[in-house]
Image (tube, rainbow, N blue to C red; front, side, top):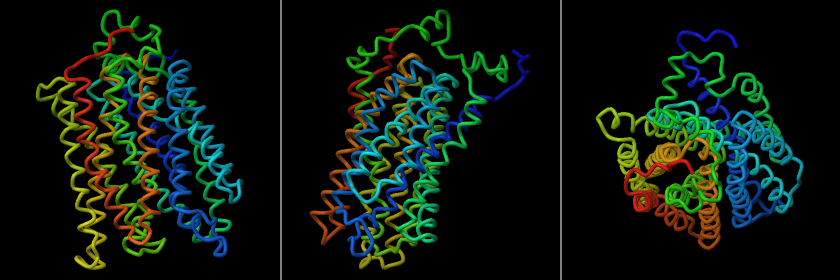
Length: 450
């Protein structure tokens, strides 16, 4: 091994790599939201002839398989390590992202390939959260998580521009296939720097002794820590721990909200304001852009409380309570979105503004929610617990997707009614989730070696 440098900030380079993998992850999954209108056109008009409920089956299949596979993905990553685990996951989702272009019009075939695509996508967050636990001290983990989690918004923003551009340039008949090929192929460019640069901190030749000491400053790496980190975790026992279920229910009650924003926001704008496909691009781009601020700022907020003397637990819970109040603004979306009341110019601006608050709050919440795992569990268990929680969160996500699709068909003549109900769910879920998490873990309860 070469001599270590005197100073380094390698952990932030690792964070940047996680940011880019998450960006690719969300570019790939976001494609279908911009194809919905075409999929639901009658076959006589060149579409696939799907109903809103059919489309919800596709998004629910992805969400359900994604959620189910995160448990296995977390287990796999805990066993093989983050370097190989994330590389395998990205390869799988990229291959099936490209293959989605070759399945024709049948809903069943799209569901089959999109489900295989979800198997690979399931590995991104367990690997990323575990990487943050390995590379960052506890006080920096929420910020690092917020930064890489901002890739979800950047990915959605890129998709908001790229997919409509491809469709406009090539038309729907060829464009939907090209969209899958282009977005699915992006991930392969990420693999090279990841495999070349990544290693665990203790073996990385570019990590200085000072940075290594900072990374290892938490109690987990004090005397006897090596035994804690390397000890085998009885995986099945994670299911009986209240800390696991605090995280899992936090995911169950809030994950579906982000899925709703991702897959149904373009449809809401089309129906509520009569936007064209091109007009949808800017407001969706703005929503996801504002959400970046929520992700990074929300991830950094606990550090301020910790500097004021609060424990990590109290800082995390106070931050999450403040964040949980913010989505209540989404209750005003239906009021502000009334064109008759505010006009064609201001109604969309005001409605999108409330959704921006909700999306930013979700990302701030998510950055802190993910970090509760590394707050409470030894590093060896982080991938598995993240997978379990994401599985339960996916069940909630499936429920939200099915609800949105069903409501849009039931209230086909008055779509604003369907979205009014959905926005009530989006506004209130976080406070309920915070209360449930507090009931499961009312005080600092770190998990000892299992």
